Structures are given as structure tokens and as C-alpha cells.
Length: 225
Length: 113
Image 1: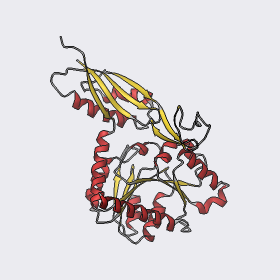
Image 2 (image 1 turned 90 degrees about the vertical axis):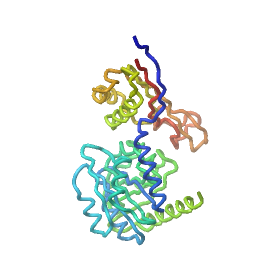
Image 3 (image 1 turned 60 degrees about the horizontal axis):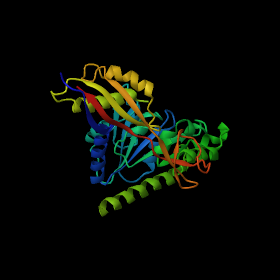
Image 4 (image 1 turned 60 degrees about the vertical axis):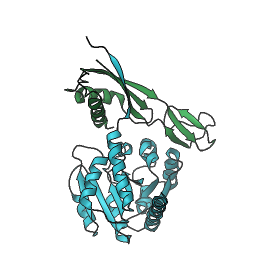
């Protein structure tokens, strides 16, 4: 009769995902590429803002689009002239490190690219899945309610930057933009915030400037290593 | 949140750790879950039975050990334990807390026969 015994494991549940994410991170660093993981609710205006951002940027960009179904978003991105790869997650509610690795194979990213990974619109699950990005950027539109960061704190805690989007609509929505910012800082005292509008172009220069300075800092750090 | 995919992650690790012929069955798996990990325990238990079917851990007990939520208070700059993500600092009452621990999702060990 065999005996019961204890086996120590001490492994993260998401260790397989984290392994893929680390491979992606290494790959992107070798290319001098800078990657952001864009996270938000569905309908926050991610794709519209991204199209406006790409049109206003000068350097090389590439986009990975995550959605449960359709290639609509990748089609919209390609209209800007940027290469895009659509990942359909099917029933999945988030992108994972493995999917992004495959997307990188398809995209063929060049030197010094800014890579935008537009995650599935979902403020819960994508917070836990590392994709190999350099920073998570949360997009929060002014129509969503000032207490959104309090309702879904994990995502806003995980993000380095929040884009408070569709600010052109603020006068029509009886919203308090300062309260949005206060609630973002309540769940993440270190978060940076830029107010943006794809329609008026407000904040685009600051957002693109943020990307450029983060990418430059990464290249300096990589070169020093 | 994504308890089904978490269980699939656990199954991958458990399958690997139990691959040896000397292990007939896994009878218990112990996890360490931080308070801020966002894991819905009931959903995880529900997914557990389904995902583990056909593996050596089919029917194994699932035990979850809670790890505390730890945050840095930006007002008094102390590391404090809090039960809920939006709780004020228990020391100074400040409202600006940055989580620094409690997002753990680890497989600690397993019992096998």
C-alpha cells in the first residue's frame, strides 16, 4: 500500500503565462521596441484614440488588437497605414502572453517600434495577465461615471498612466473631471493622468510625448545593461 | 474573474509535478491566494471539479490559504495590512494606499499517494 506524502510546489498559478510574457519582453527589448498594454471597458474609445494617436505619430508603430470576435478593429488600424494583427480570443476575456507571442511572429516588428497592444475591453481579467509590455495604460471615458476606478480598482492600480478620454463630451454629461482624477489617485496614488479627446485632439501631444520619453528611458536602460 | 483559466494553469503545473509513475493520485492541492488577487473562491472551487476531470487530481481536495492585503500608505509612508482594497490606513486614516502585496496566486504544495 503506497503512502501519502507531500510535494512542495511553490509555483505561481500563472507561471506559464509569465514565462511567455518574459520571452516577449526580451524579444521587444532586443528590438528597442516599447510596448503598452491598453486596457479599458468596452466602448471607452480605445480604437478611435489609437487611430488618432497613430496618425499624429512619426516613428514606426505596430498594433495587436484583442477582441472576442471580428477583425473590425484591426481593419480600422490598417486604414491608418500601421501594421496590425487581430487576435480573436473566442470565449476568452483577456489576451495572454502566449497569444501575444504568436501575434509578434505575424507582425514582424522593426527596430524602435512603438507597439500598442489593445486588450479585450474588460476591466477585470486583463489586470492579472502579463503580456510582456512595458506599461499598462488604462483608458477611462468621461461617460463611464466618476466612481469607475473605485468599482474596478485592480486595473487602475496596475496601470502606470490613465487617459481620461472623450473629454470633449464632459460639458454635456454633467461630470466632474477632478473627481475622476481624485478617484484614480485614491486607488493608485502614483498614477499619471492625461485628459484626451480623439475628436478635438486635446491631450494627444502630451500622450505621444509620454510614450516617447518612456521609450527613450527604456532604450537608455537597455543600453546600460 | 477568470477562474476557469486559473484552474487550467493549476492543472498544467499539477500534471507536470505528478507525472512520475510513482504517483498514483493527487489527494489534496493547497493554494496561497492574496486578498487582492481578485480570485472568486466559489467560482474556483466550481471550476476545479470540472477542469481536474481525467487527471491524477480528479476528486482531489482544494484548499485555499488566505494571504493578507498589504499596502503602502502615501500619507504616513508606513506599510500596513488592510482587509479591503478601499479601506483607509489603519494607522493614520489616510486614503491614498498603494497595494504592495496580496496579489499572490501560488500553488504551495500537494499531497499524493
